[in-house]
Image (cartoon, rainbow, N blue to C red; front, top):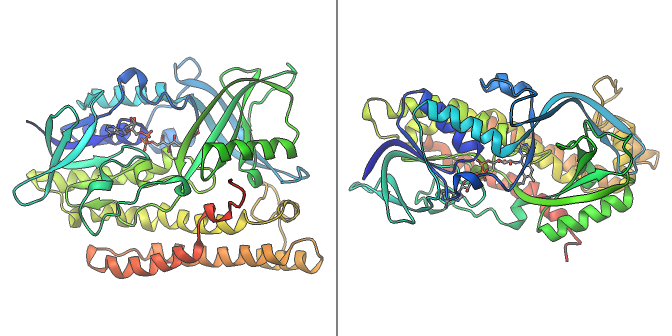
Length: 441
Ligand SMILES: Cc1cc2nc3c(=O)[nH]c(=O)nc-3n(C[C@H](O)[C@H](O)[C@H](O)COP(=O)(O)OP(=O)(O)OC[C@H]3O[C@@H](n4cnc5c(N)ncnc54)[C@H](O)[C@@H]3O)c2cc1C
C-alpha cells in the first residue's frame, strides 16, 4: 500500500493543473489515468485558450515555435440568424494542440514531484475504520492510500458518483446534460480566403474557426441529446448560412457538460473538479479555464486542510464551495438560466436582438434605452414577437434570482439544505437547454 496526501483520478487539464498546484505547495500527489500516456486527450486536437489566462493562471505564454502552439487571434465575431448583422469583440485567443498542452502541464507537475500512473483505472473508494474516505482501489487490484481523493475524471465522474454523503450529488451527466460538439476539419477551395479568427452564429450554436492548416478551418456545432442530432443541426446551419466552399478533411466529435454544477464540490476527504463538476462556460461550453477558476483557490484550501497531518473534513474544504459559488458560480448560474430563454426564438427575433445591440453588442456600440424597453419597442413595432419577449424576460428574471441566491451561498455546511431547497426551486423554473429541442427524432 502506497501513501499519498492526495490522489487525483484523471490526468486531463483539470487533474494535471491541480496536481501541479498541489505539488508546488509541497504535497505528495499521485495522478492516475485509465488511458496510456500516448493516448491521453487524443479525443480533441485543437482548442482555444484566452491569452490573458496564461498570466492569470501563472503559466508562461505559449508562442510560435512551441510544439503545442498553432496560432493566435485578437477579435471574435458573431453574426445574426439571418446573417444580416455582425458584432465584433476584442478577445485575444491562443489556438493550441490539446494533447501537447497537457504534456507541457504534466512536465511542470513532474518537476514538482507529482507522480503519474497511466493505464490505471479507478475501481472504487476505500474507507478507514471510521468509515471515512482513505484512498482508492484500481481495476488492476491495487490500493493507494490518501487523505484526499480528487475526481477529475471528466464526464464519467467515476468517483463523485460513488461518494456516499447527502452533501454530494451523484447524478450522471446524461445526454440532456451534455453538449455534443461536432467538428468538421475542412480545406477551403478558394486559396484567397483565410479563416484567421473565430466567427460564430449563436442562433445555430455554430461557428467557423482557424485550424493548424492556414488554408483550412474548423466548422463546429454544439447540440444536446446526441451526436446524430448535432449532425442534423450542422446541416440546418449550413442550409441557412453560406460558408466558403470547402473539401472535408476529417470529422471529430466530443461532448462537454451543459448543466448546473453540483451544489457542493466537497465531502469528507473528497473534492470534484473540471468536467466531473460540470464547470463549463454557459455561452460556449469551454471548460479548461472555467475549471481552473475553482482549482486555483482550492489548492490553498486543500493545503491548509491537510496541514499537520490533518484529515480534510467537509468543513475544512467548505471555503472551496463558498469561493466558487459566490463568484464564477453565481455569474454562470444567471447566464445559464438566461440562455434557455434567449435561444427559444425565431430567426427574425434573433436578428432584431442583433440589429438593436441587445445581448449581442460590439465593443464600440452605444445602445440607447434599457434592454426591456428596447424589446417592448420591438413588440409594439411588430419586429419582435411577444412570445420571445416573455421567454427572454422570464429567463432573465430567473437568472437574476439565481445569481443573487448563489451570492448568498452558505458559509458553512449547516445551512446547506435550506439553501439547496430554494436553489432546486429556481433551477426547476429555469428549465434546461434540452427543453428547447423539439426535433431530435
Ligand atoms: C469538441 C470539443 C471542443 C472543446 N473546445 C474547447 C476549447 O476550445 N476551450 C476550452 O476551454 N474547452 C473546450 N472544450 C471543453 C474542454 O475540452 C473540457 O472542459 C476539458 O478538457 C475538461 O477537462 P477535464 O480534465 O475535466 O476532463 P477530461 O479532459 O475529460 O479528462 C478526464 C480524464 O480522466 C480520465 N478518466 C476517466 N475515467 C477514468 C477512470 N475510471 N479511471 C482513471 N481515469 C479516468 C480520462 O481518461 C481523461 O484523461 C471542448 C470540448 C469538446 C468536446
